[in-house]
Amino acid sequence: LSLCNKNLEYLNSYDGNNAKDYLLAKVCYAAKHEGESITQNHGKYQLSYPGSQICTMLARSFADIGDIVRGRDLYLGDNRKDREQKQKLQENLNKIFNDIKKNNQSKLGRLSLDQIREYWWELNRETVWKALTCDAGQNDKYFRKTCNYEGTWSHANYKCRCKKNDGKNETDQVPTYFDYVPQYLR
Image (cartoon, rainbow, N blue to C red):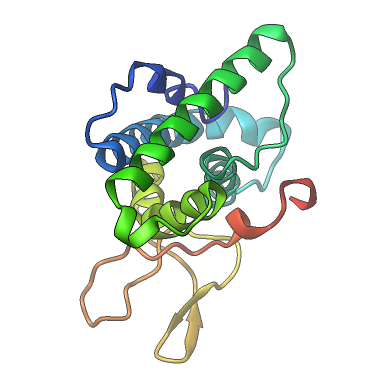
């Protein structure tokens, strides 16, 4: 469990206060450190796999983070310790999502825990993507055109991000949907 939940393992210190803010902060912290690690080690990876693009690597990691948050991660771990950490992490995530549901009963009361996890991810995926791509280079771009700006397809060519469609120069749209592709197909 050393990939994206390296910093998520500390969710076990959760005490029930500010569930949604706590979870977003922890997931973004883990994503930021994951992005730093990928960016710093990309050169070494290039030696074995020439042509691998940083944005694609970040997108795959982003999808893994989404799987963990939504409880869909298929990776069981390489050993007993990994499996125990994963189980503890999922127990803590379930507790946090139950608290989010309890604190937002009028809005989320009818939803299952899986639906709430999905809802949380959809609501926060853009913020997690921004955290993950903080250390991406100014000219790093996604491997294919995924941004649709005024009907024209273009590359996510600034820190692996697409330009917003609201007329501002901000670049924070997520250019990937790997997080919606089942893990066994990626």
